[in-house]
Image 1 (cartoon, one colour):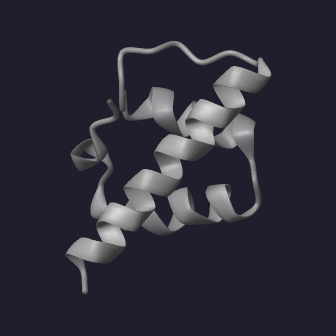
Image 2 (tube, one colour; image 1 turned 30 degrees about the vertical axis):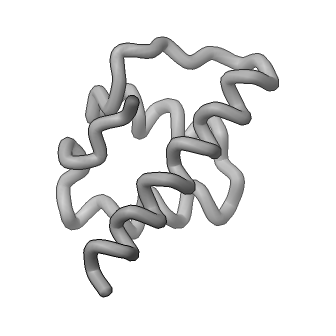
Image 3 (cartoon, one colour; image 1 turned 90 degrees about the horizontal axis):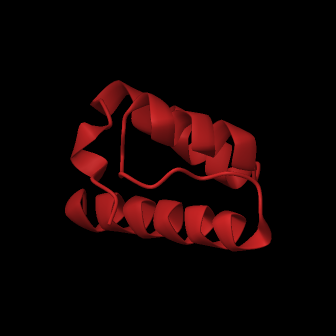
Length: 67
């Protein structure tokens, strides 16, 4: 489970842009910078699927909270 509360409010736009551009490496670096989970992502297809799934979930939750 990712802890999205660790993302500073001023960084959400950057987070969303990384997702929209499908920047897997950027998202992993973002994940690591803010320690969003205890998992160490690397480079495989399963890691990519998982990262994009979690980011989409986080963006949807933020959107839901802000509406």
